[in-house]
Length: 375
Image (cartoon, rainbow, N blue to C red):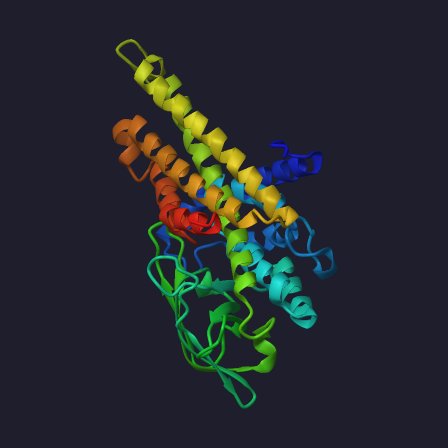
């Protein structure tokens, strides 16, 4: 598979890079953080983001989207990572959109995919119930009711859930052979949404569902048959998160490399010291390996290959470890200034830490890869 972008993908990257750098730079994240903004992202920017078509990258053209694939979504996510731009694109435009495309009925897709593509509605995936990612552990109960379903339970780490208009919620009926997916409106009676602040200045949410009554039409796909749709949505999110991690890692490396050339000590640039050269060379190599893993995962996911799940786990795990190395090296090689809040490295480090855990850390994906390989 080629590791270079096509002409169309390059145009998309250049467009996204210019737009995001101008309208959603790191300084904007600082302002949102310092103001303790409830949404954690700029609504005006989100509307303009939708106007550029980015919100509908994965949404089929029939529903107002661009009808593109994982590579193009990753192109946008890399630029988001480079600027630490806060937006609901990962949760709504990637994971929730994929779940709806995989499990939604034609009527559900017509209503909700169009709303996601236009940016009018934000849909958040709610799959996790524990402090560590484990989508197979579902204790939220879905009981058949007279006119539909009744949901009871809780979800945590719901990305952008505090600002969502609806949720894609996984649940399990007693004695059911598999999980089900439901589309739950944010204003549903019995649903409590608690905003939870995260270390990277991006809020998430905790959901408590207490006897939430849903009509039969709220079920996405077949009852008890949503396992494949959940994994597909999560893999789309994992690969997109890996792209964001790679984007922020590359910025950390670029800024560190520039500093090594500028900072002088003992009469020479510190980049002339061999020990620092070795560390920079190692990081450069790790970035190249990570990009290869990411592109392979994106192309495999877009093609619907049998290896998509394994490729997604490899890319997510690899991107997390590389981003962690990149931001740690950025802090250390900048010396004392790297520890200050005024310096952006700390913001990149915090975002990398959250993304590394999101939808599975390295240990989770090592175990998952072993299971997929038959061990």
